[in-house]
Image (cartoon, rainbow, N blue to C red; front, top):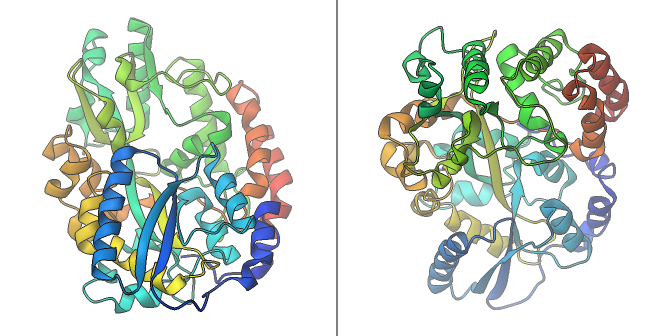
Length: 430
């Protein structure tokens, strides 16, 4: 759960966000009479996503024509979605609703950019706010009970396994190890290193990782008991013994070939190529796979501190500066009610407990077996934690990126992470 929103935090955000907040006081209801036109900003420009959203939007307009005349879904074309969205807000072109990436969620919540939709969701008949998993909703709440977004995509990270590649290397099928004490990162990387050595393939990769997206690696440290910062986000923990142990282990895996070396911002080899033994990714990657080789989808392995599942999220929210917050909140409640959440589940794993079943999740990942959906999604999501977030992330992410460069290139881990904490602690402490 987020801390109570702080206007003090708001003024420390990026310049663009700060400008938008300065103008925030002038936002709110327009006082217009009659039905209004709503717009929703999106990260995705996927035609299938847009078609489904338009279908739901048209149905809402048909039922609530006296309140809403039209709903338009507008992808933000800037390659940096958050920069594009905040620039749009600062320029006065404020969408009524917006797709909010999880990494930026706390900054948006704490800055006051998002409208509290808690009352609307709680009082909408049939909405069942308590059906949303508490762990999924918590990052979008504050201590006062406000709700600032619906986490429409709540997707766990899992381990893809190329079973043909392991067999070619004479390695065991790790599927049989799931649920046993031997299903660990140490076991997986031992097999990854052996497979890479025997076949010339990639052992284990994290396709979303590059030095800029450093959290794709640091998030896995929770299985070592490591976190980048304290639970309240105020204390740097990069230099903790647990994080040093984890990053040292990660560095060792690169040295012995279990994990490929970092090569700038070059895209990692795709698991779909058939040349990667293991890949840490979300279930959406299954859509790019076919029967070219035999593969499986498993929960993440355990580390020295046990098994700690992780989910990545995206939320949808109403913007405080919308001139139609009441109408936008009404549509948000419709867009994310149990019936439409099930429709959205064909693309996005839902946060609703009632929809965590094989039948619904098979829509989003039809190539996964019922057993894989059960063990890697349904069994893990209720206990999963959201990727580490921080309300001032944009202010220090570049410092962390630069500070971790020596780790990726074989430098001293303790020196590197100590330097990171020296740089970002004043920012975290505020």
